[in-house]
Image (tube, rainbow, N blue to C red; front, side, top):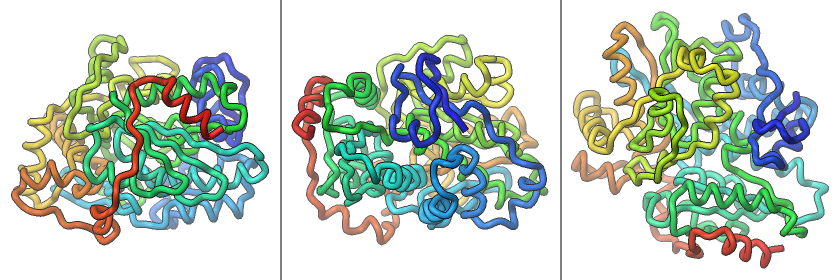
Length: 433
């Protein structure tokens, strides 16, 4: 399997090179030359397969021969070593809970897979490996956890100052050692733009081997297919083909789901559930991508005005917008609607949503108003405790704290505040050079 750049100005590469490069030299994103189509028999029997076997079969066509089969199997086993249950909320809507990993967020799968692939690929590289990542909240903690203490790899995490939750900030700023957190006076889009800018001038840092851990990297993006195959394994066949609502910020997660659908996974329709950063919902109305200034919301991990991965979705559908609209709808949900959904879902069904899951739930309800016979599930991307400062005042109860998060509050934040200026980031990297 080879990957080309969405900007079409760089050579095609294999999975190893795409992973190591992160972003293509022409600033495009790598995209597979073809989508692997799974056999009907494999899809039909998926309920009898282990999660490790499902994940291996889903990712193997894209990895190709760049990782030996036994090592890839070990990587996959470590990646999906925690439960990903599909939980029924009411008679029409279930929740695919992606928050049972070490940092209580869906990014754990991609971060664990990518860190292990990079560990294998960089064994013989003599330069210092430096992973650059911009985060709107959850990616930072997952990457810090996935790469913590990995020999020979430094991680630099950029996050928007004052725009991540208390728990998210603790997770990405308290590990120390090979993890460096930079608190940027700006938005996630600013952080992401700085990272992309640095990649375009990697020659300025001859002693560093720069790569990315955002979902622009194929090794972070493609493993997100696993969620949807695991959901298919658990979905009750008598419910018919499901509709899936995905809280969407940078659009990597829903793009991976669409890849799974194109590869044969039975999905009736996808819903891109966005907060007030409504670039994509507006695109579906006007046909134009017009990013505005990023709006801070209580679903902060989705505070993205210029989603990088949307270009991959356009590529997947060969820029045929009518075909795209057959597979995906997009809704923009306000903070007040998000809060109301958290309260009402907890009162009615005893199910506690985090703000991102609540955006997905409200969008699913809007879709079901138009298609009342449909059934489906939301992708619940984070544990509510990560946003306890938002959730607890709404339900007037403390959010249960999982064991793996209890000790984090006593840890001391370690971060460096920088301006929204790529030259400051460049200066820091040159010192690491």
